[in-house]
Every structure is written in C-alpha cells, then in structure tokens.
Amino acid sequence: MVGPYFDDFSLGDVIETEGATITESQIIDFAFKFDPQPFHIDIEAASRSPFGGLIASGFHTLSLSFRLFRDTGAITGTSMGGGGGDDLRWLRPVRPGDTLRVRVEVLERIPSRRPDRGTVRLGYTTLNQHGEAVMTVIFNHIVARRPGAEG
Amino acid sequence: MVGPYFDDFSLGDVIETEGATITESQIIDFAFKFDPQPFHIDIEAASRSPFGGLIASGFHTLSLSFRLFRDTGAITGTSMGGGGGDDLRWLRPVRPGDTLRVRVEVLERIPSRRPDRGTVRLGYTTLNQHGEAVMTVIFNHIVARRPGAEG
Image 1 (spheres, helix red, strand yellow):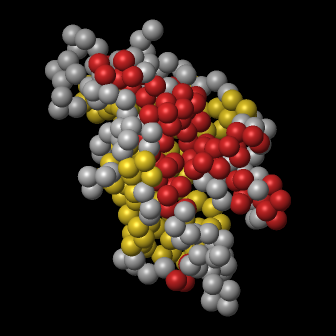
Image 2: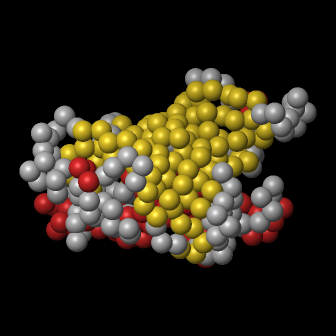
C-alpha cells in the first residue's frame, strides 16, 4: 500500500481519521515518562487542580493525533519525514475515556527544490466525542512526488 | 519545592537541562505507539531510507525535551498548563545512543487578564552530544504569579 503522492493532494481536501479512546492508564503512563506534572499523573492532586481531574499531557494528545493520521494511510510509503509544525494550541482538557479523532485539511502544497519531493502543509483539528476541538496544529509533511511527475 | 513564579522569570534568562541518552529500544517503543513509520521502527528499512539508519520520531524528541525541561524544576508547582507552541523545527536526525539536552531561553513574559497567572514564552533548543541543534520550538507556559504580586 502506497498513499497519495505530493502531486495527488489538493487544497481543501479533508482527511478524517478513525477514533481512539484514551484511557486513564495511558494518560498516566505517558505522562510519567514525558510530562510528570501532578494534573497528569496524580488523580488526587488533579482533582484539586483548576482542571478538576486528571487530564492528558498535551504531548500525548499531539502524538496520538499524529498516530491517528498516520493510520489513514495518507502518507504511508511516501513520507520523507516531518518538516515541522506551527500554531500548536491546546484548546480543551482531554480526560480519561474521551474518544479522539482528527480532521486534517490540506492547506498548502509547496514544491521542493529537490525534484523528488514536496511539502504538504496540513491543518490538524483533534476533536473529542462531543465534536469539540481539543487541539489544533499545522504540520508540514515532506512527501514524495509521483514517479514521472518530478520537475 | 516550588519553582520560580511568573514574576521571577527575566528576559534572556537561560535554563540548561541535564542530558538523557536515547536508546534504540526507547525509539522503537515510542514510535510503535505513536509514529510507526519504517525509519522509526524497522532497522532494516531505516538503513535503506534517506536517513541511513533508525531515527527517533520527532514527537519523541519533543516529548523528551519537555521532560528534561520539567526536571529542572523551573515550572514545578507553578505550572498552570501549556499555552501552545510555535515554530517547531526538526533540524537533524536523532539516532540511538545520542545524548540530548535542552537550552531554554526566556523570550517574553505576557501578563494574563487573570491576576493569578501569566504566560512565559520560552525558546527551546535541543542539542545532541556534538552540540548540534536537533530541534527548536517556542512554547508558551502558563505560570502562577507570586502570591502578593498579582494585579
């Protein structure tokens, strides 16, 4: 399976991911490694925090959002790496039991000086089960050009 | 232990983290969950990729960089959550055995409309053992004001 090439992405195209439910155990495991703040790893402290309970690390939400996008196959076999991100915003808390999915829109296509690749600029919106946006970010993905379409 | 309050950060202040060596096992474990692209989880495919070998997911480098910053204590007990990020750039591959540390500079202090907090804008530069920058990002951290300094 090879996903679309750089040349196949069109401005305004929207890719919808499947969903994934984030569990209390996943939230604590991730945060214990990468973001051990009390409101991510300590249910008692979290309940006394302004968040009123345990919430996922923003880095967890971000990483999971990318995984969901990856699983659409949209860059499978064509990804040549990440070109960075912009405008990362965490808009609402993500709590144990929330089910997240991601809406990804093609914002821009930027041909590279190297003829075999280009950058696709994608706007991610991560939504919870209520349809509320919990995170937005723009990512630049370096994607191979269709063989024969280079130049 | 409580880290500095919003009022204690000064423009140009630099916080240096300790280092951490990233292992092959950590790279594969993280990527298998969040970024299962061949050059992050498959040593054979990675050796044939443009990267010439296994490299860490950019989301892994980002999450680890935050953990190293967190361990400095600079936002311990005062962090009120993440205010988002900008200008994330992955500059060089991170490979198994690399030792990363982070240089964090205070770029801006933005008082909040809410009197108990403010946003500290921090520029992160993640460096490898050769002193080469592998990642840069700007993060906004929401930090409590010193009790009595509100307003």
